[in-house]
Length: 453
Image (cartoon, rainbow, N blue to C red; front, side):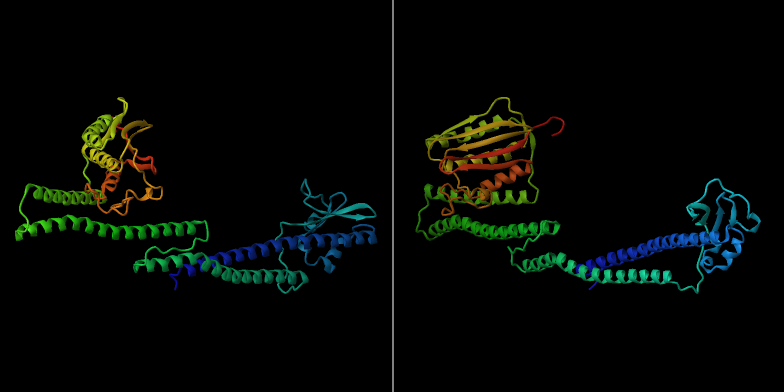
């Protein structure tokens, strides 16, 4: 039970509430006593000044005032703190009998209460603040009752505040931990295989951000699971087709129903090459996923890389009636890449452009952008619908879903491999497309910096 975050938060709120209430009660009681004692002293000061003024008026002076102070009950609780001076600051009472009749021994008077008779100041009454006066223990005055009631009220307020803190803390703790409890329940469901579940995002604080991140993770996991299943089905399909062809031919040869011929062996060889190509593509992706794709990086002229790729595909482009050209300045900065791997990327993109372009041209270009170099492969083909663009780099994804295997044997892994290789070079690959107007693939790579790369 003590492990519950809700209980811990409740106890934390309660502890803060109790501590706050206790401090408030202490300081309220402490300050109340100080202020009340000051008020009582001031009032007593005034009352005693009036009594002494009446004494002066009745007796025509301060004669025998010491005896009066000792005998009058109004002075009994303050007698030890009283200092009485006449109009000339001569000590009448308060410094001991030996000092009576002598001038006040200090240059400046402390705060005092003037004693006036008929508008004339006849003396000063000082209530010595430095004396630690404590009233008798058996004293039970209205003042003590007042202070006792104030203290009791402060304690009652502290207890009430603690109970309120407990109730409020429990409510807040349950409210704050509700999203976490929901996350826990959904996480357990996902662990049981129910992917794609979402939780409500009720706030914009850290808990809300956690819920949003969880929802995105859940969505991504569901997509990954769906893609994994689709990938498994696509791999099985792409393996089954050439294997079925090979099986049919080999069984025909074995039974003698087919005669061996150069054409037959060429077809079988092409199917074997398709299988080998698919296996190599899968191996490349698995190495990239594991971070074990070996790269032999060196400084390479990007224009030369584009020209070499264009030269490799110029004949295929001409056979389809397409123009293929390279448009890149001679002063492009060098890029630090694995030449063979980057050629593989460009080959995938150019062959893809040839596959989906029936008229027009394919342009391979390069530009320097800040600290990077951009390589672009632009075609005038059918283009890719906007809703398909976010998925084109997924494995086995084809914008034309009705065609599981292209006539030239494309595995559906070309763009996924291109992205994996570019990512391994700390680069970025994106695509921009207008349906019916063509597609442009943009590869952004860091330029070569001598002494750093």
